Image (cartoon, rainbow, N blue to C red; front, side):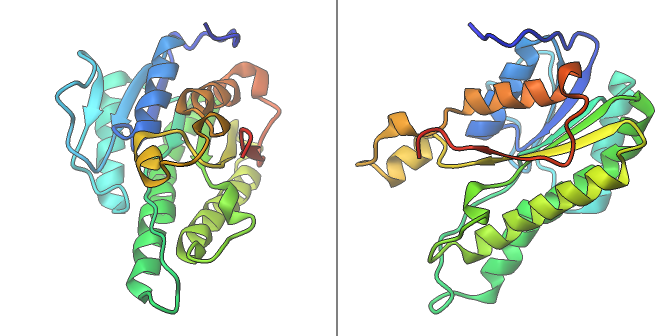
Length: 234
């Protein structure tokens, strides 16, 4: 059982990339704390999506018009928006010598442009709520990138700078903006890709959910512009 004592009853929180391993875990954690969670993703709505939930699939979240219309529709259904968690993104390992510039473009679009488009669409509603929260998912690898990590790390470094700039832009308007910098997540895909690794050292998606819950809570109202490593024992 979680040791975090928060109650999100009456709050509406949008989670992008909500049908993936991390997004689904975060959405479940926030719903467990009483939030009404809107799930947004480029992927189609899965058959096992929670009944009665606000689920929006097949959306190009990097497209500003698509992001804006989806968030507007969600607010029309719920009447409000209190938090946005930007998880939508992707990873590509590719060394520059053998790679293409298209990889850099696609990583930018998946990891940074989605966050920018969704933040821009959500901000009017978050300001209106009086205590809006934005949580972005960066990457610990963006602090020190290794070979083959250039495109991914650069896009996630952009997420960090977006977080800092937005936090300063909205610090006097009731919206906090923070980012988590995870190391390796304990997901089925990562276990498949790294079968000999010690999975116990990785970060469980549910643990990311609990850190996000704290940052959304009233207890974290004084925290903004933070880039928080969540590294487990990696």
